[in-house]
Length: 114
Image (cartoon, rainbow, N blue to C red):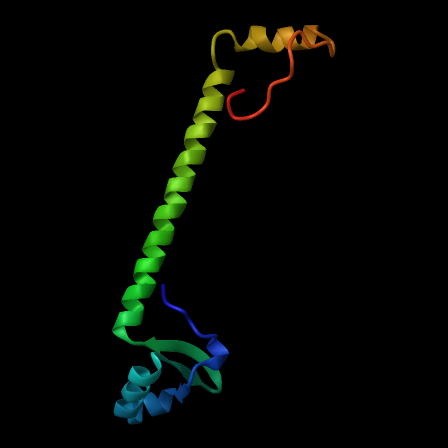
């Protein structure tokens, strides 16, 4: 994974320097890995070398894959629980719980298997 410096710590070049001194800007990007481009003293963009961009894109893709896997797992758990609530005997089971009026016939169950 790419270790990114803070935006405030990046070397800076003005937009005019990028336009007028492109070779110097390219040299600085090669040396430092990235350069903050400013316009009126405010950072508007960051110029990074191609390898850093590839690594950033790969990291973002891996993160999206992990997020999708977690969402798929949560969706499967939800579907299982919803299916148990929609089972033909779910109404009878819920009514039986209310009829007990606080008395338990068995030990309480908890956890994902419940």
